[in-house]
Amino acid sequence: MTEAFREFTAKKLGRDKKPSIRKLLSTLKDKAAALNAQRDKVKKKDREVSL
Image (cartoon, rainbow, N blue to C red):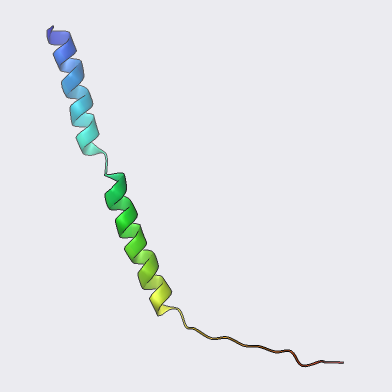
């Protein structure tokens, strides 16, 4: 019984140390939005014929 309890607590503690996937995704999503906002919106259309 004590061995099963030790195994359970080891799994539980190991799970707490791992970062949450949802939190990681939200932080990366915010960083990507910030980078996208900083990017210049420049469109250059160059359709002239060059010989």
